[in-house]
Length: 336
Image 1: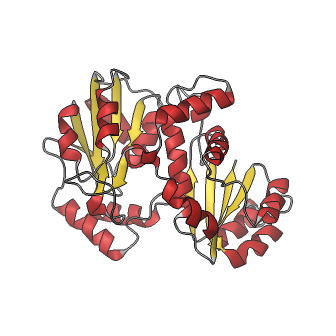
Image 2 (image 1 turned 135 degrees about the vertical axis):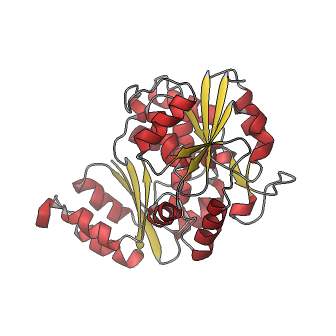
Image 3 (image 1 turned 180 degrees about the vertical axis):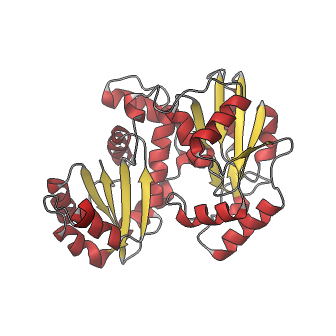
């Protein structure tokens, strides 16, 4: 197994995904279990199936053990939680628990754009109840996650006896990012003509804002973000197409083409038809990271150690984009 495995635990809104992304930015090997291991099933039997609910989110034992027993890397951070986490605790050198107060939890659940859990009052109350009960694995070390992200990660690295490196100090081309590279704007289908009309050459309005982004922002119901390199999404799209998952074509290609011609980047419009056909197949835990990495390296003719995690994140991004769509709702997906 890796010389040192560290689990970064915490309730919804504690910042596990943000910590994962920052660790990757700093050059560390990390896994987001929501992307790589998690599925919904029976915590006792480990069998898949059942509704998507907090109580039956579990880790795929075969995948988790394979990663945790691997001799590489020397240090691995695992960011996430599940109902069957305790059976994996012996694999970890230390377990860290991200702690936040109730007000921070409420605010983060309300503001986050990468997960719909916590948007319903009963979900918020469940998380607050668990927070007040100090829910965490036995022996976990508390880390104050109300601090700025840089400080949280600095503290984790110190406790793990790892060198503290600055963000972006060891970036590879595929991991380069500052702001979101891929964005999906979920809007009503009736708003598409308004967005298309605003997609002319950039026009500045009050306070220097761009009219297109201003209009798109006003019409947006939900925004989902992807912060890895656009190379990853641009590679994933043809890979998924080869698997029979076509996210590059739709009945709204004229709108997508109009926007793409006048804006920098690739543009696609996804609909409920994509959701019905492909949502169930876009489960990151059903994909093999090693296969994804080999495809990326062959497609781009370059070595890309660690890109498998970014690819799995991309699959989750597409899944999260399709999830809220229905007959009256579409997603404008932009790379760039």
